[in-house]
Image (tube, rainbow, N blue to C red; front, side, top):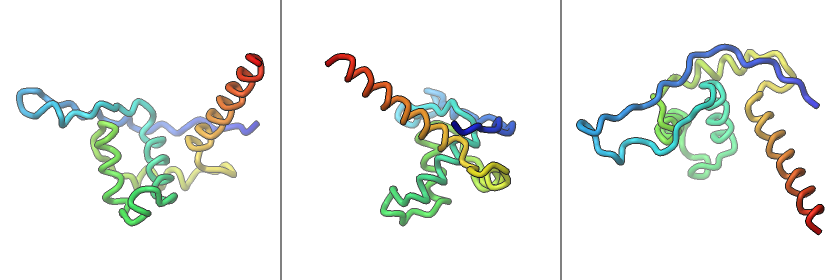
Length: 119
């Protein structure tokens, strides 16, 4: 099992609050990112590197603000967080993506075990 260092303390993302008197209800995001800011940046960079949005033709400087909006947070400078990710000293510097992969694989194993027990 891989050990992860604690994520460095980074400022929290600031939720986008909309006032119903000044904006329409449709401008508020139904999704709210509740994880760490650096984790969202790691996810954004991962999505960008996978080229899964618009066949990889959307530059990060356009993709990041869109994903921030989807997750209901104010746009931040992704690159500053990316530099912090690059400075990590572990063999794998993608702590969030590694934890996500580990948790998803464990869920699938649990689900398979439950399926076997039902038979």
